[in-house]
Length: 581
Figure 1: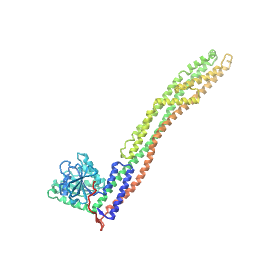
Figure 2: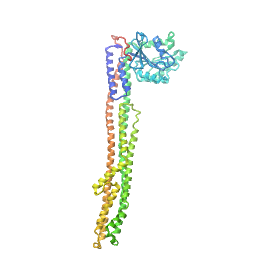
Figure 3: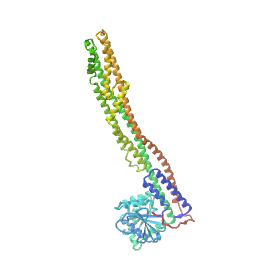
Figure 4: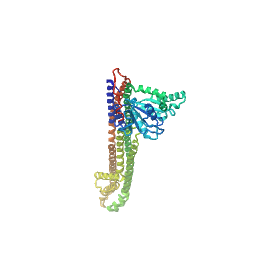
């Protein structure tokens, strides 16, 4: 590589840019393989120039490499013989194998002056049965400074090759297209057709027309090939110190461009997901309001049924007063015990049991609707879990954990808030409330039985008070009609007071339980709401940093593209050290 103040400046700026990109990726919780890609790009600046040979397993890559080097360095065969990546460097000991940090990469030395300052990389064939081979090649591609893309004249530029070439384009790698086995093409017309076909295919993928050279490795090994001569001329120009320096500096920039594009896509996907999540929170709030309105609507209907029971009791009590408080029943009026028993039997009748059943129905329905709402919350949140558009980043893991937390709160509510427990809670709270409002209600009764007993006791209280003062001596002409009017009036007052107290107590209990459920939901959603706000801030900051890095990338790329050797530039000592170690 050329050593000049300008090159050193560009190298320093590239290192700084890669460091900033690595910091951004780590800070944004990018996937581990993406972060490692940035670290590899940093190390690549200190490696020898990597000339990487890629192609399908049957394109004759090993034969091509041996022909290019003019020596039998690599094994050849008709099956996928290369099961690892070989990094060939110039060395004194032929065939000396050195291990590297990567167990699938071997460093091989050979006395080859043509490799001075360059590491030639032979990769496993793509589109092979052994999928690991393709993974190895694709993983090494981002480290390449120049790619020799080998295809075969008998099957030029297949669909799988097109897909692989798109990876090289994605990473911004410079490519030379090499069509091997050109000796199979018998006429100049056939060669022209193949060349045009490969040029068109490569241009469609790369967006530019790379050099396309037709060669025959077999012919070169047997005495010489004109295509190989042309290839060596192209390589001589591409591997000159100026061009090699330019390509070496461009390679990490291509990696940076791909890494930033990936982070931009992940950020856009995360922002889209957050926008959708905000919609989810708004919809949860809307569902909660609809649930409250529905619950209150059902409560009105349930209370109407209770009021109907009280009205029916009121009709029976009116009839009892009219029948008993009259002169024709003077004997019955003098027996208070029989009168009370008759009132309980004829007026109160089945009221306590009917109220108990009605309140049982009311509580059952309330529990059913309330738990149904939490089941809907679970199902609704479950639909938000898939993240097809978001890579498995720290953002997605945190988001998934918080969504699971909300769903878990719903599940816990469903498991702990059973019908029996809620009914017991409502009955206990209602009983305590009635004790405070009316007084004298014995503990241990269900809400319906307790209210029925209270109604019966209250009714007997005012009836007994009216009837207790009646004696034969006090039954004047106007006493009974006045007593009857007084009894009707007090009955109305007592039933109205009971109806009002009952509705107040029940609505209060419904509201209290609804507030408990709302609090659970708010507490469960609060961490996710806070997370959403924090992520929006983080993503906005990352977007600004990303834009600044892309501007720096573009400026560096422009300067490197225009790089030329200054007149006084002195070449650095050639070295293949550091390659893939």
